[in-house]
Each structure stands twice: as C-alpha cells, then as structure tokens.
Image 1 (spheres, rainbow, N blue to C red):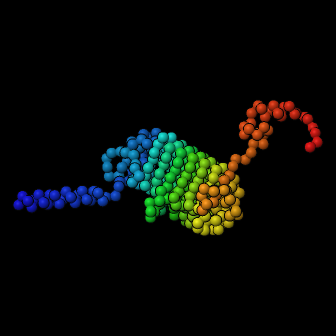
Image 2: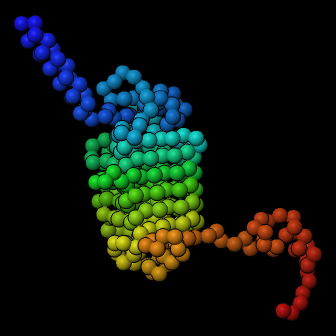
Image 3: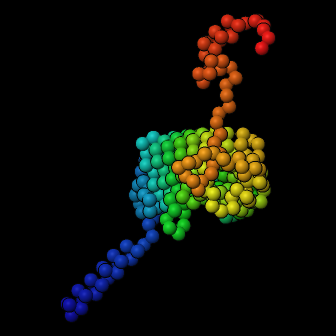
Length: 296
C-alpha cells in the first residue's frame, strides 16, 4: 500500500515538473510603476500570473499595458541590454513611445501599433519608436521572426512611426510597412538600416513609406523589392519619391548580393574653407574679400 502511495506521489510530482517545463514562458507587461521609464528597472514590469517584478529575457513576450492610465514611455539607455521575444507596442493603449538612446535591443518581432479592434477606438492608436543610438536587432528563429511590423492594425487611422536618428537597425527578415487601413512611416535621419527586404500590405504609398534624410539603407537583391516597391513610391529621399531602382547603387563590395541607398548631409554653403564647420575662419575669408569684384 505504501509503495503504491509513493508511486502515485512520484507520478504526480513528475507530471507537475513536466507541465511546468513545457509551459509557455510568462508574458511581461510594461507598467512603468516608478515613472522613470527605464526598461532596466524591474519595478517597471509586471509578470503575468506572478506577484513579483522582473526584467524580460529573450524568451518572454512583452506588451505595453498602460496600468497607470498614462501614455506608455519606455527608455533604453547606453549600457542596457534589452532582450525579449515579441515586442508588442500599442495594443491596448492610445499612445506608446519607445526611445533608444544607446545599448542593445534584441527581439524576434516588433509590432509598432498592433490593434485588432476594440480598445483603443478605431483610428486612435499611435506608436512612436525613436532610435538615437545603439543597436536594434531582430532575430529570425528559423521559422518566424526577424521583422518590424509597422501600423499592424485593422483600424483605419491607426499609425506607427519610427524615427532613426543614429545607431544601427538590423533585421534578419523584413520591414513590413503597414497593414490594411493603418498608416506607417519610417524616417531614416542617421545611422544604418539593414534588412533583407521591405514588404507592405498597404496599397497607398502615402500611408506607408520610408523617407531617407541622411544615412544608409541596405537591402538584399533577392526578391521583388526593387521592381515592385520602388517604382510605386514607397521610398522617398529628402521627401522626393524614388521611382528609379538604379538609385540603389551604393557600393557594397563586401556584400555582393546587397544593394543600398546612401544619403549624405547636404553641403554647408557658408563653409568657405571646406572644413565642415562654419566659424570665424569662414567669416574672415568673407571679410577679407568684402565688396571685392573681379572677372572669373
């Protein structure tokens, strides 16, 4: 009798361990409890089905939660290593901002404005990602991932916006510009954006596009991107739509299967001595030749 009881006890414990081992990792909800907005602060996270706080790891899904009733604001700083699986911004909130000033952020997929109806009301979801430095890396896990999905919503008017002022964004798969009636804009103002391809489910290029002011956009040559997206105006340079695939001619000798656009800052017309800064030495040149006139 005792042997039977011990056996069943062992069986119950084994099943419990097995179920725990096979259980999906808990999701992390951003609550910004301290209001310091720091990703690295464990008090800003609420772990699903657990009464304690912690910082997400590479196996955890992350969702914004808006527990305090305020717009969500998340900050990743220099020296931070931020890891998660799927990063879902703006699902249940009207406004979410993720700012990356440095450090390293890795995820499988980032959804910039994911809303399939319900709260918030249609047309009121807005998500902004500001990348000032550091590295943003989207990892393909062999069957899924490696993507940033912008404006992924069935709500007309819902929008996502990424502004890259510096740093490096690397996607092992694709940037998906927008879905259905939503809007999405990726502004490349500095740094490097590197993806295999760009895709869109949005038929209107005015609702979903990449605009390059300064920096480098790099893509694979494989696929239909150059022939399908570029001629229809989904990419602009300094606000001017690029419709000629030959614009993608940045020399990438170390990556023979890749193409890109590299946009440099416009020259400073008042930089008279070409030292890339306007200062008193330029004024001295101007003053030295003030009101002079000659043929040349």
